[in-house]
Image 1: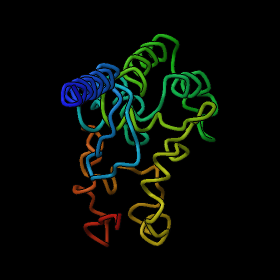
Image 2: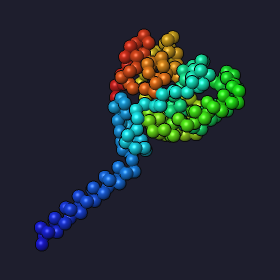
Image 3: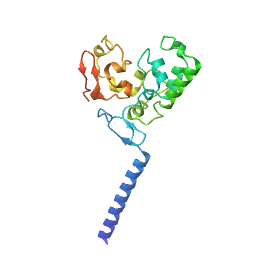
Amino acid sequence: MKRRKLKMNARKSILLASLTLASLAAIGFSALADDDGDEHFQRPWGVDARPGVAPVTDRLYREECGSCHMAYPPGLLPAPSWERIMLTLEDHFGENAELDTVNRDAILGYLLSRSAGRVDYRLSNRLMRGVRGIPLRITELPYFRHEHREIPPRMVMNNPRVRSFSNCNACHRYAERGSFNEHEIRIPGYGRYEDDD
């Protein structure tokens, strides 16, 4: 009788464990290492998210916005951020970057459709973690700060070939393609950089 009870309890435990794992997989929450091995963040979407962020594919956006600075991949900011940026172009970080309504609306539509939170790319998903309010700069995002916290200012702000953390493509060689992999980083004047974590 005791043996039979033990077998039944063991079967119940296995069944319960299997159901728990199946439920977690169905929900889609899993702790994943990002492209550079960081496991501090979870992503809420399916386990088959593509790496990095979606690359810039819109010609108009690349021409209009990329003529002054890097054409930031839309997946680096959430939709409300892009909306606020595009609707206040008359004072775009101290510059007048106004566009005619047709071009502005076309670019805004492109940015919103591929923004963080609306596409299933790993980096876009991570960038949404801990976001409060409507950040207007990628450098304000908690995940961005986490990833760049140990980089000394001399390598970025005091480096005449970089000058700002917002100058992504100075160090991330494939930034416009949507790749921000740690192993591809080359800081001008310093070479390859690897996080100690």
